Image (tube, rainbow, N blue to C red; front, side):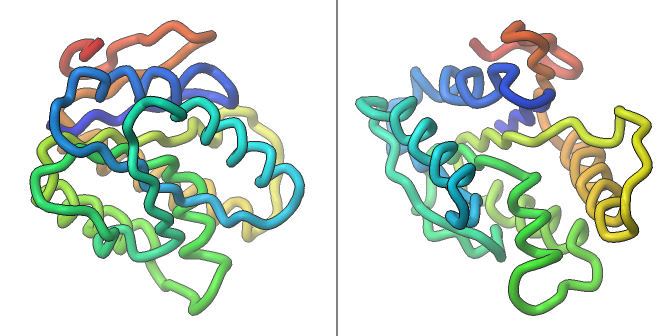
Length: 173
């Protein structure tokens, strides 16, 4: 089962994603994609660690190459989040020509090994603000990732002001 959770900033995506896996009886892995540089990143990471405390998640960092995330067969995986992963593939390390293709293929490979896969992403490109060429490219790639994952996901849920709104499939919690 694949569930894609989307929405704006601080709208309850992470909380909802964790609730999806509350009843899972096997091993649960949290695949963290945030590059831990800067005060903001460190604050976000600390907040997410606190949210997961006592929820039996094993945290695995995977800044790039999501298809190679170090998780065992048959486990549940929560990926937090596609926005960070896309930025990492585009701007950290070797430049990836088509990051959307690489990430979507990696998600497909990962989904074949997992019993449950919950993917958190961000809503981008809706504000109408003019951006630099790099930011426009990032928005385009993340939008492509979101659309392609939504196509093969079993469930797509948008969190709006902390309220989960089912866009495809059904509410899983």
